[in-house]
Length: 354
Ligand code: SAH
Ligand code: SF4
Image 1: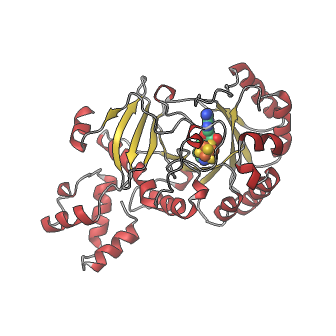
Image 2 (image 1 turned 45 degrees about the vertical axis):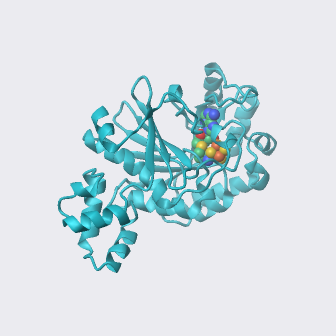
Image 3 (image 1 turned 180 degrees about the vertical axis):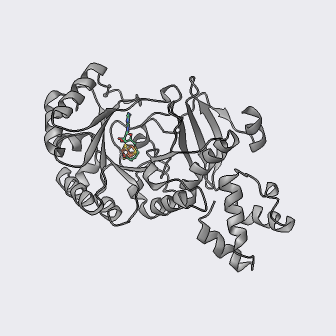
């Protein structure tokens, strides 16, 4: 669905009154209407007109996989030009429904531990292709009288390599006359594109920022994250300090635990010293297999030891719970690989399945 202001512009050109835009947004985002024929407040001829000119979803859901425990649902979407992206819905026990969305088809940054980085890069998504991943799950949840509570930009792609579309999608997802998801419940994750972090610091958005750090020094970071060749760790720390000073918002660091690569006691102390004193939080991520033969995940004992060392430096740490591993929907596994997904035929069969 387009942004409210873009719908208003379209309607204005056709001399259709403004209130129709708000009727449409209400029906689509709050009542979960997937077809203009169901929006009975609209005149018949307008319903037909809009069906062709203002599609409700700009992306087509083609496959769906649900984890055995039912908590995680991965959907493969096809874009107009045939590129594909994935998004994931996670149902947490505490009632939260978090949607993990993609900002690009593929990723140009090639981190060694990430399946998305190993696939061929397609293109950046338009803003509505990003926000429509949320709309799809929001509509699905509405049918069960549930709501999307949180959004993470942690799917395929690097959000700050598609900066303008990501910012516009944030405004659409946050728009009170549309999806209306609170900015504080949205997190954008970047691998450390400093220009993006600096611009983001000026946006006056209440959105959270996560930094994929994964190494406590430049040498190691360069080995596993080629992006460090362009933006060094010291530049990254400068951008983070600037962000903290401008926004006063807590930053979260993501650190994927890789056996004998970045999980030693020395690295834990080095990381502790690097970020000590910052308003921050560290998320340790158990590694999810991607097919790279040179990389294994750290054993749980090692992860716990790493956490304890960071805590001894006064840093708040959580160990991320892994979800959706059995359907390759966990962090770093999104790569449009064929699995046990069910093909989604039409909206109608989709509804029947539920
Ligand atoms: N490109 C952005 C956002 C997408 S990645 C970024 O890198 O931040 C979302 C998170 O999953 C990142 O922290 C990423 O480093 C992490 N990740 C990538 N591959 C992983 C893997 N195989 N196992 C666990 N986490 C992984
Ligand atoms: Fe791209 Fe993020 Fe994967 Fe690195 S971890 S390759 S930046 S999607």
